[in-house]
Length: 121
Image 1: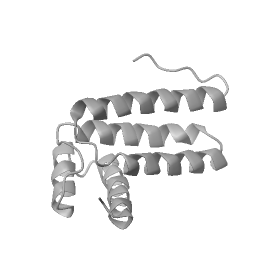
Image 2: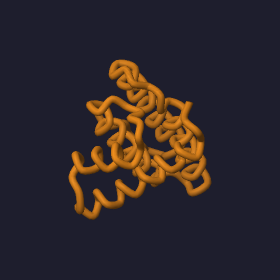
Image 3: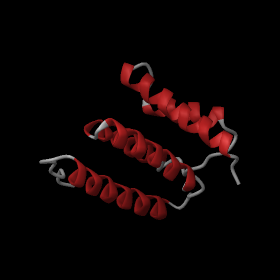
Image 4: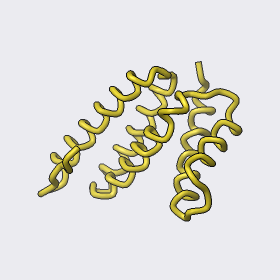
């Protein structure tokens, strides 16, 4: 089982990588190599890592639409959910988790943001 400190470090690293990517300093493949180098274990199958990072990044951006108190609550919830499913390695299981996560994100946004419309899949 992964210790909580290692998980927090990984989440912080993902946020740092997101910032670096936004600046345009590295490509996605560089991000994968950086994560593999930093941690001696691979929590996700390599083929699913870009999709999981994209979901995390997009969801963090969508939380900007929420009020500040809600924003912090849902960001914390997102990080905890990511940590709780970090041992998932089956691509089908990961896809299912991402689909359920997207459904939950859009439900929260429809409930909390007046006039929010879910984009087509």
